Image (tube, rainbow, N blue to C red; front, side, top):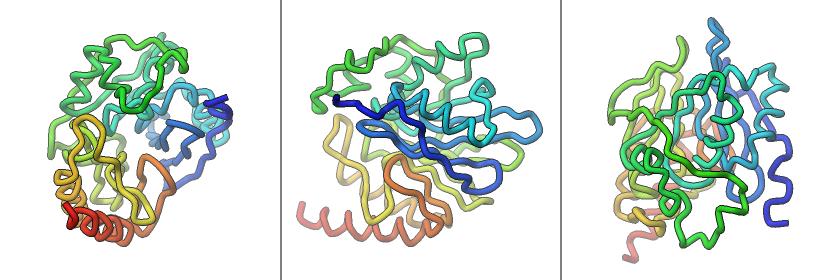
Length: 249
């Protein structure tokens, strides 16, 4: 089956105090991150996954005594299917106390309109019915470029608009913890996000990676592949790789 194993437990890891990483499951899923407010037990979730992996996320969270019903906010990095489709079953599951959703620019517009074609571009060749999830308009809080968002007493993120992979792509950067959640902008091992989706741009991607390459980053927590505690080295590697590609265009 195309999505076999997608409900399996998402492997979790404590990155630093009150911050947890849950790795992507098979096929069109993404890494997810949970921040716990130790004063209130409230949880903030970064990216929603593909929906089919929601049970797996919950299983992984429970191993760290993180109660999924305490998710009060969801922060999105961009509008693609593997990052946002999980919003819909999550809102149903937590319907008694639904979390607030936060996103930037184009991502907000797409989710509020419930635009299936933008969430799942035709270029992917995927039928959304395979996920068994109904896409409906959602209320979304719009984040502002360069503004700060205090997620808990220990985590204060600055929003950085970083287009190239998609029109709504942002990074969350915490200067104090030297922590970057870049979505699909940049990955470990010299990799970087695709720029051939609708709204993608190689030039914009190069500029965005150049921008985050100037940030002081220890912990790089991307949307796919592994994480790293050598963030600046990994970002610089990706920047060199994309420069080598862009030189041919």
